[in-house]
Length: 287
Ligand SMILES: Nc1ncnc2c1ncn2[C@@H]1O[C@H](COP(=O)(O)OP(=O)(O)O)[C@@H](O)[C@H]1O
Ligand SMILES: CC(=O)N[C@@H](CCC(=O)OP(=O)(O)O)C(=O)O
Image (cartoon, rainbow, N blue to C red; front, side):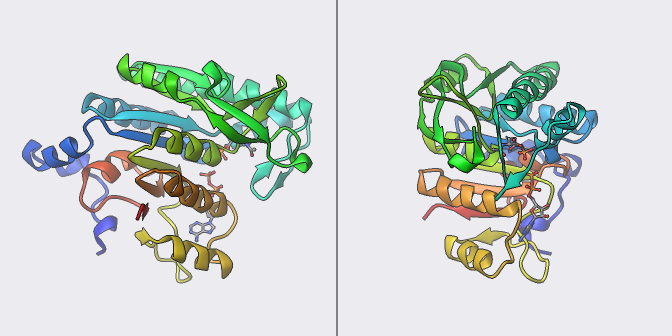
């Protein structure tokens, strides 16, 4: 069995504290940005487990930052309102009416659900979007996509303030434009941009597969930038995995130490990744 695939259930393994200590020390005061995608969110039990993991991370000295998605929840609300929606290269074409719904669902329902789940586990989560404290300013990504934003200026000051106050930032992927517009940002893009601005120690992209798979379907546990480019060119990396691997490369380029693509539905996935030798998913390292 490959190292990173081994025994996923770390909690059940009943490690002794002395075994766990080196990992805890390694991540003391580390900044770990976690992208929590709509497909990874699952039911209330999955949300509770995720929230418990995040609170534990904070308790052992990590500074977690959650950047969430919510694509499926936006789709559901657009359907109810009979607003049609389409994606181009993994990004939602966003007109003014769609933008209103996107903001309502992400900043309202999804953001507050995560905040509440973390706080119910004893954490101090604070919900915000890229519009708060000028965290993320955007340019239009592409005129054909409407109000889809490309982050151009990030001011992570508010996040450092929250770290000092023992709070856990939970960020909805929206940004502000220079002319008062609201922009919709792909969750992976947002997480990568924030991780780069913070020069994070780790960016965890939680998704609904156990890592990046090769042509034979095996998870590649360690990936290089060259491998990613080759696998994208030959079509092995496709669909929703393209924005993730692109985000990973951009984040590494921007100063993030390592990016991991892993299954957010697996119990305790973020803890397994940080606090075991075998880790979880596919890792892309800087340098
Ligand atoms: N090489 C690959 N390895 C793993 N998943 C891949 C690969 N190529 C494409 N995919 C697809 O990418 C999906 C993950 O992207 P997406 O559905 O957008 O995730 P999320 O909603 O979590 O952001 C996987 O479920 C899988 O169908
Ligand atoms: C521009 C763009 O596509 N924005 C996304 C934002 C939410 C998101 O990224 O959600 P997941 O991570 O759950 O896919 C959208 O409108 O769906």
